[in-house]
Amino acid sequence: MIETSKFKILTISWDPTLAMDKPSFGDVQKRNIDYGKQVSAIHSITYSPKKLNLKQKQISENVVAYPTNSTSRIIFLIDAWRLAKKICLENKIDLVLTQDPFLTGLVGSWVKKKFGCKLLIHYHGDFWQNENWLKERWYNLAFYFIQRFVLRRADALRVMSGGQREKFLKTGWAPSRVRVISTPIDLEKFKTNAYDGNKPNSKYVLHVGRNDIVKDYDTLVKAFDIVSNKVSNVFFLEFGGRDELIKAMDRQRDISLNVQSIKAENQINHDELIKFYNMSDVLVLSSTSESFGKVLVEANACGKPIVSTATTGAKEIVKDGYNGFLVPIGDAKALADKILELLNNPELAEKMGVNGRTLVSERFDGRKNTELIIRFWSDIINNNL
Image 1 (cartoon, rainbow, N blue to C red):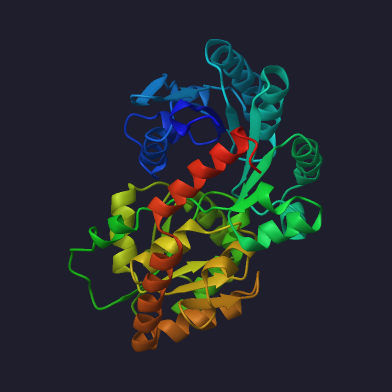
Image 2 (image 1 turned 135 degrees about the vertical axis):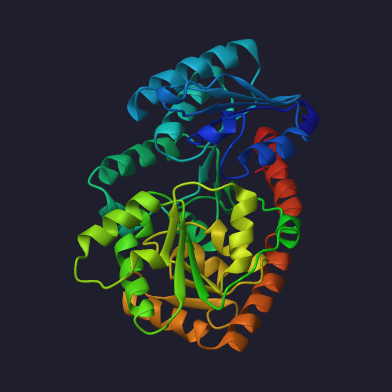
């Protein structure tokens, strides 16, 4: 058996903040530092646009990030493969893990074939046997076939929810090769970043997303509009997807939503985001598909109730009527109705928030998930699946 302290890991991902000196969003560097404490080395290739001109970054003593500075996401394939070959020629890599089963997965499969290491595919999205995902973009059908190619070469899969896992087991994957391990979350961090400002006599509805159609900003904007017409002094906070929110508002000329009632940004420091979680009355998520929904856990960790569409991932986190509400995908009225129920019933909102904090403390502790991830790596490398 190989000791975990001897492992050398290669990761391939899409998050350029991994190589930034001062990331403005997320905690990916901290997670990699925590993983690095358990293994010999982590070499992390990450996509970065050429305009950022990022440099190789030593994140910690044994964790290094290699930005690709690619001119496009297709060229990223070539750039990532070039870097992977160089890293593998200089280091005996035991395991390559990729962020998705598509382009990063394709590079991972090439690395496995040429250098003989194990291959672990991460499913941070609900891509397998998901008709909603197939309909989101015209090119997802091509990605579906790439996914099938990559899956035939994978040694194991890490998924974010039990619903995802069940779909793979039904198609013949061995249970030991598909494990549910959500992204580690430092729950203690959410107890020490409470909102310390003066909160006006207003209601705040928070959405945390990204500029991606999977977040279904059209449905979100319609729900916001319904809520704003029934509750006075309500404000809507959007962090991560300002561009898509504006586009959705432009597409719906018949809405009466007041722009002055919206605060929207594309990026925000994670510590600042936690303060907005604490300031808000409810977190809403309108996605058409989610494999997990980290923001749902983060909101509950701050004691805030949730209203979310019933995606595979949301159903893993939200117990309908206990720590939040689940509504049908694409149903703006149902989304608005549940937001209104919580805004108009602060006692219910507080109770659901308390329930949520208890639930995530029991199920999504970051230290436990980090241990599960390292154990999975060990089992893959040592053929213990």
